[in-house]
Image 1 (cartoon, rainbow, N blue to C red):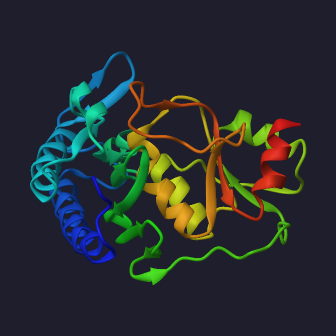
Image 2 (cartoon, one colour):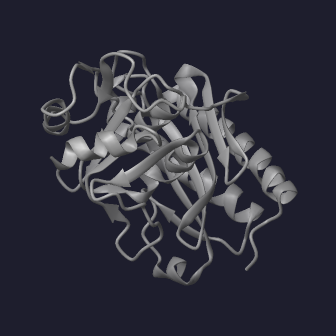
Image 3 (cartoon, rainbow, N blue to C red):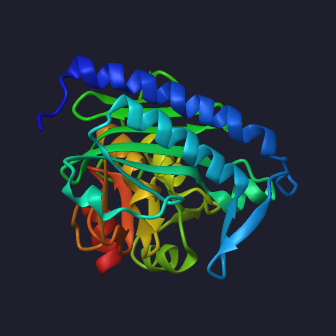
Length: 268
């Protein structure tokens, strides 16, 4: 299957933007700033929260996106996995609410994450954070934007001051042993937003614990890449998506020029 032309990919992106915004409109009535969500809440397993808003958005997005590109497979946090996706060149990879725990507790850092992946690599990424009124977008080879403004990370090979770092404490500790000074930012509960904020320059280094899933990172990965950054494993490997087990090891997100120094610090 051929990659869509720039024109058709751009047209597809327009529809995905509309779907992401509409999904946000569906979610916002359930959100209570600083308080528990109005949505019904339960847990998958012992500790992973899910709300009726997650399910409503998942159902809506699957219908909309599957209609836009019927030949694409589907992988979502809230849909029972169908191994038929492994035989598809194109796959939609979606987290209807990335940061459900934040959403459920009234924290604004949650987002709707939508990626279109072709043969294991994202070609379109949309990330919508309704409470921040922020929409990130990237198309392969065409750039990345935040609310319509082009994102481009500076080409510097050293941190101009203290490196602004967000992520799990053990990984931040590991980085700080070899890169100083470090400004520890609050951990962003939506992993997709954490990576997108590296792309927009408000975070210098984003660190990711093991076991992040495809739907957590695929859209933000492309946004970061098109802004001039890299998301890799600590071994330097680039994520591949739509594998039988859509899980990843510890990762680092940083501008491309700073990647060698940052990843060297994590390996030391």
